[in-house]
Image (cartoon, rainbow, N blue to C red; front, top):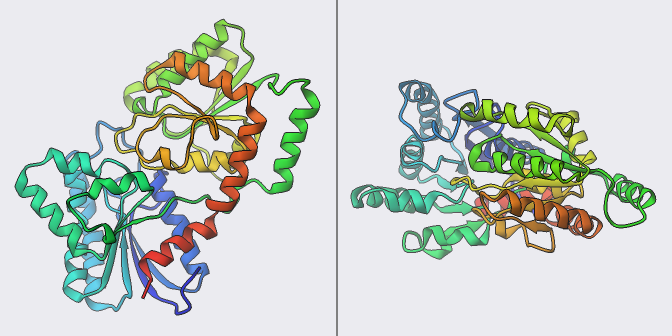
Length: 381
């Protein structure tokens, strides 16, 4: 529910491109706040315009520093000399990455402007525990200078145990953009088509979707190994891959894709109608992730909103939106055999998982509900 009084808001964080869960979420929130009548300005804090591998994330770089100077200067100037009701920041989870957002927190604190930060991941406590006592003290001070810290799920609130009062830690699950939420009539047609062409609940050719950056820590190589095994077992499927490929594994992905042959299609980075079509046309979404920064992947919610069964792990805050046997099948990390078992389970129970996921997403993870959750946290009186 949106507050009656419209507010002036400054958003600071990454916006597309590149496409990441956080940049997409920020773009969706910006549009929703504007639609609800608020006056919103935003500062894109992206230091790089291209996808970077896990190895490169959080590392010191002169280029990153130089690219960060301008948004820091503009943001601090705006907070100092313009009047905002609230500053909303989505910072990085690495220690060095987080530091570039601290000037905004300091200036907002100086101006006594409300300031909230939202972490789109589950790595904050690991980062906090990995640094020395002096740095921990500094981090604690910055967190406490804010009016609150937002996390993506209840399981992630424990990251701030002993650091922040529980009353200053808020939960806001992600949401799905309207363009990637399958209309209810089309969802019914999707199920009807499957039920008409199959005498059993199993699907003749199972379409499996991987829609995320193709990173080793997101489990892409494990999924490809699982699919190679299924091909040898004459299991009928087609694997659709979409996203940037991590530089370190390009050759490996190409070799394994070549082995799969006609069983796999790589679509590159997809947006708009092409992304919507992929979500609509597939049956199972697979993200066997062990990515250390994982929070609550929007791609899982998008898949749910298109009636896909989900195969994933318990990494980060995924357990807040996914239950094994209800939304799909849990797989073990770094375990291709476990992925094969999960694929078979989703094939056998597709209709059950599809209905559960679609209506759950429609009720809880739609865009309007997501924007309303943020409003009720950062704009409360």
